[in-house]
Length: 283
Ligand SMILES: [Zn+2]
Image (cartoon, rainbow, N blue to C red; front, side, top):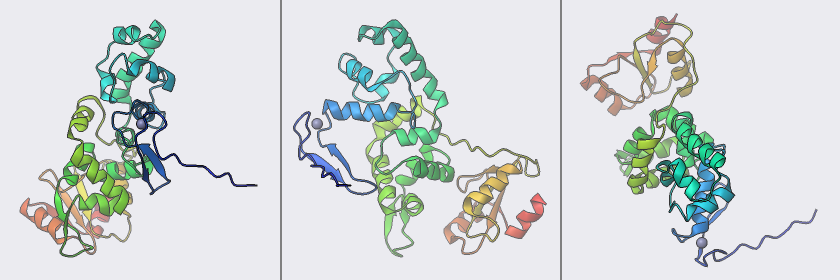
């Protein structure tokens, strides 16, 4: 088979602005003009896809039709529109009702990991979005971490914003999240206003041995991976915490646990237990 050479455009075919090229995780090219109408449509179209917010009534064709008349510049402009607005923008009544209902439903139906994906942060697809939410528990907590300066343990003396995020999903994707969270406060306010931001685990409790207890593990455990221990706590009826707080009942301390976490736990008077203690609790 002969390879087809694709000639990459240097300027946006729609508005003539220069093209920006991003190389990681598949080459992304996009228009540099934030006000380019095609760029806006492409972003909206991604937001409503099945993998993200799953708003079935809003096809690319419909988005193109209503974006201008309804002055929709960002996804959140869709959420304060009424049925009448969609009709006025040229949608039939049936379509208008469908779009309106699907948008309202998506507020509670789309899980937080889909919401995080829908924001279109480069290299944040399903896997990274889920990883972040499993670890931090909510988009609010991810933002908080992204705005906190932490010690970069790989650099020993260097401090950087959102180190835990970068450490979790890697340098490039992690930095993209940190940059996004630091530069999009307005958009984030709409995320918190309209959409699901808390992670809900699929794990289901099968015993109540840890009922009413909030537990967190730190360091390396012999019998559990990081996700595994979380799964185990939930399966036994407990709650797995997203970080050290006064609400925590037990901190399971594994090998090479971070000293700052242990110090914080001590300050809060949280009971520290070994992995063996934990295994006895769920026996
Ligand atoms: Zn353009």
